[in-house]
Length: 67
Image (cartoon, rainbow, N blue to C red; front, side):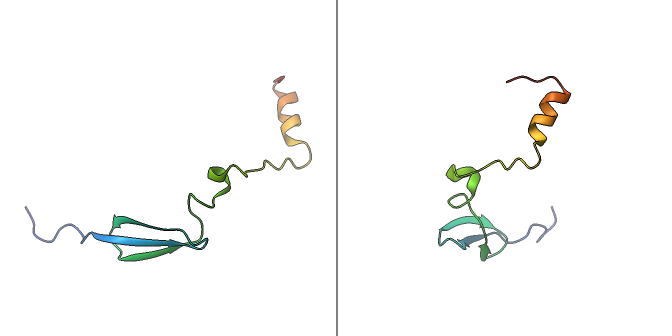
């Protein structure tokens, strides 16, 4: 096998803009992210579906989908 083929793996400290910090294993020693699972709307339950110009109703009408 070839020597030094794989990159060096570090214990990476990841810091989010919301203040959440966690560690993982990757090829960088530290990383900053803007959004994480603690502040993302999908995971926090504050996700809102914005229906502009009735597109959902238009789709349902076109394909005869009644809810």
